[in-house]
Image (cartoon, rainbow, N blue to C red; front, side, top):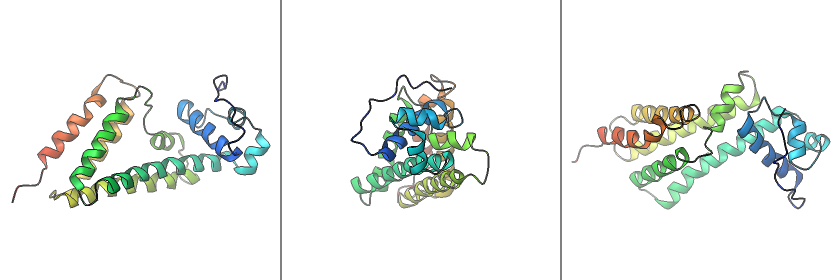
Length: 200
């Protein structure tokens, strides 16, 4: 059973749905989706199960909302990079590499929450599975687009290699915090240099 002794301070001014989603997000990420029950979420959100089920018809629906929120934040990162460096694929890639370095050196990093959820939710028909699949596909396609715009010869293969390096690093950091994941940015830069477009 998950303890909620360290739950966030109650903030009644925040609508119940937002409090429930915030509590679920924290508990799911720290303890895992299967380990956290609706009672613990309701308590951490300073509400009750009846209110939770009024906003989310089931735990599965709450999980789907949690992952949808995370996926939107992931999409927002790419949109932010596009706004900050309009039309400059190389600058956007550099911005993404800085983001990668930041999250991999964060002491509280427990890997990608969407990947962690995919490992736990083995049922193919679970409503959250499509959310995860769609997001990871969009992420890979973003990389393909950036590499194509930056002039790399085989953007699909490079995107796959970069994608697997980053995803693997986020998994390995959970079991080997001082291991190869801390060198992944250097590895990514070496990979990009190896595939760099030839000067015209």
